[in-house]
Image (cartoon, rainbow, N blue to C red; front, side):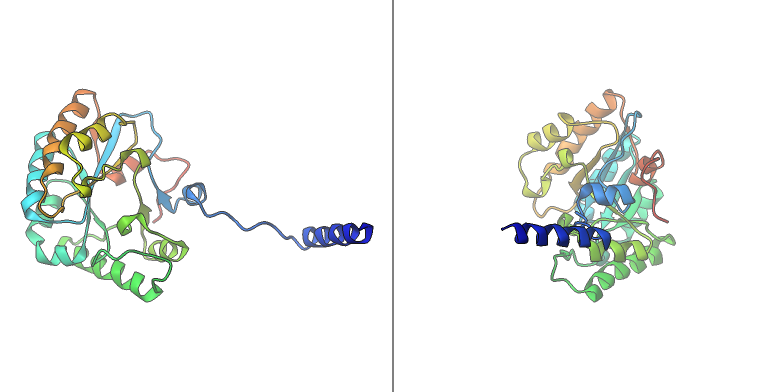
Length: 245
């Protein structure tokens, strides 16, 4: 028994001398500290970023744009490349009215562990080209569909000049499930904090719940003194987490 303990102690000392360390846990803290993923932006300013995924889709996106215009609110649209090509006029309107266009892949592909590097590159780059060709401006923000990411996808996005953007965990409206207008409203209003990034969608087949909820959300948050800004505008106030250029 004594010899066994001595052997284990010797092994431990050897590993320490060789610089052995435990595997790095690549969690939210790890990526936030490195500035590679942003979930929200700690700030004392009453600013909030509304984001809309999976569009554009004129039937709902145009209604959302009408509401945003009414409240002089700016938002960030994480768009799909195939819809950029299908509905260019909606993208042009988003840009003309001061909103931010960001990358959400070409075909809404989930970046699971089994996905290949080539597929990740293709999904991001095709959308990048579609947006830049139409707007003349390269997007700098990327959001992986479903919030699925891995080390490979993060580094590929970074290499392509993107910062990966998620959303505040307390501001996932789950509107894509069509949970009811009041549930969407309450999720946002009951949890609204400075620096939040709110997740909504401007393409939900057969549902206008997000549009109906948005009018109340904009009215109430405006009354509370919140300013609606793009994600990039929100990130300008960051000090501890740099924007990747």
